[in-house]
Image 1 (cartoon, rainbow over the protein chains, first blue to last red):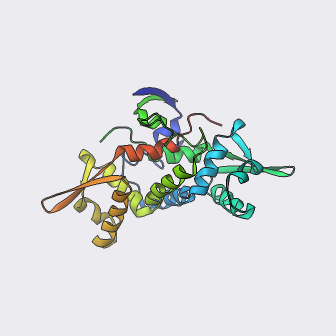
Image 2 (tube, chains in turn blue, yellow):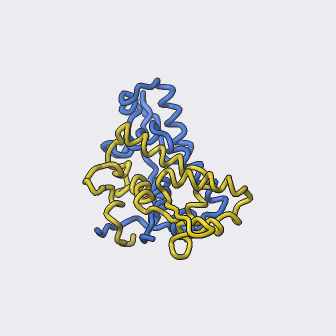
Length: 124
Length: 124
């Protein structure tokens, strides 16, 4: 066991003190919460999107140019763009065009929400 | 910020010191890891399965009888069984028949793996 300090969001409490992202071991999810979270999980439940997310998240400086992402895949640029759009629509990444390229970064609040959901704070 | 103590697995290191479950913000996932994790995520990317998982995980004593789970849904018993089987096949829950009923419990290692994946240890 080691002790680390976590952002408050990761404990399952949001800024409203609500339970939108309480760990699944704490209390049953409501139907609405489950529907909303399933949409988010479907966005990441794809190998290409998981790899894109990890490439963006781990990139030096916390953001990646689309030009940094395409070479790792044997996929067309429109296919990569489609996957990036799914991640962006789900609120997992942000993007901005600067000159020729579009740059992407992780939105930590959304990623934290998934992390908090699957964080058993105790062993059953 | 608050400080809590987490199991080692949650920090992204497995027992082999490997990176199977390193947070996505730490390093790019390999193709193999991404394929494996996408299978796990597809298993939870469903509102009924998310609710089942949270009902099992938060149940008193850390396990739930199938008889505790069915009433919350307007679904047939075979449909609930199908969803429970998907969660069990993915290694997210364990089960055991005792007398009339089957009992289910969360497998924390697998849930922790998802939690670790979506745990940014730093803000980009």
